[in-house]
Every structure is written in C-alpha cells, then in structure tokens.
Length: 112
Image 1 (cartoon, rainbow, N blue to C red):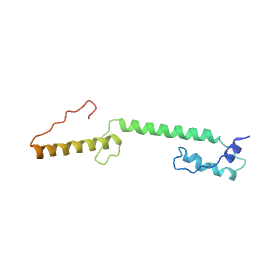
Image 2 (image 1 turned 45 degrees about the vertical axis):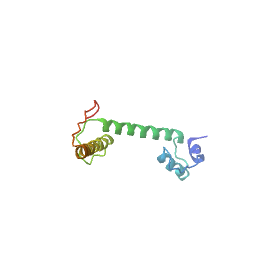
Image 3 (image 1 turned 60 degrees about the horizontal axis):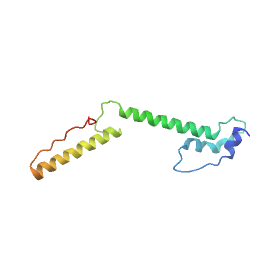
Image 4 (image 1 turned 60 degrees about the vertical axis):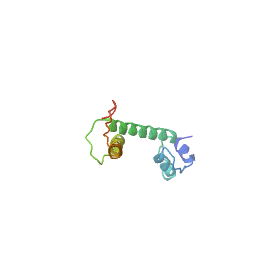
C-alpha cells in the first residue's frame, strides 16, 4: 500500500470541530494526480496540529510581552486590563455618589 492509496481511501470528514481543516480539505484532490507522491494523511494532520499549536504559543508570548498599546488593542490582557479599570472607576463613582466616600484600590503584584 502506498501513501496515495492511504489518502484516497481516507473519508473526507466535513466537521466544524476539525482540528486539521487544511488537511481535510486537501484529501479529496488525490485522485486528480494519480502518480504524485503523497504524505500520509495522519502525518499531515499531526504536522498541521503542531504548526497551529506553535502559532498559538507565539501569539500568547507576543501578548504577554511589554508593548505600548492603545484603546483599540485586541490583546486579551489589554482588553481585560481596560475592563478591570472601567469596573474600578464605576465602583468609585457609585461609592462617591451613594456614600460620599472615595475608594482606593490597592494594586496587587500582578496589576500593572
């Protein structure tokens, strides 16, 4: 059995939850070029997953590094920091209007 036969016999799974959509989309083109050497579909799927994991790790690393952002920054930590600051400001305003007192939030070690 050669690799081409492995791919030709592999059913094409159309599923929204696929972790290897690129590999899945290419498995149905194998019969168009019969003499072409092919990579085993399991190897291709593993490589696609490893590539995507590496990309995600890189994005996480980029998001965790120091950067100068703006109010439109979409990095998860920046969004969470803005939401936290907005919530703190709302609590301060409520305490001031309802109780006539100022509230001070002490920063934790991880607050920046």
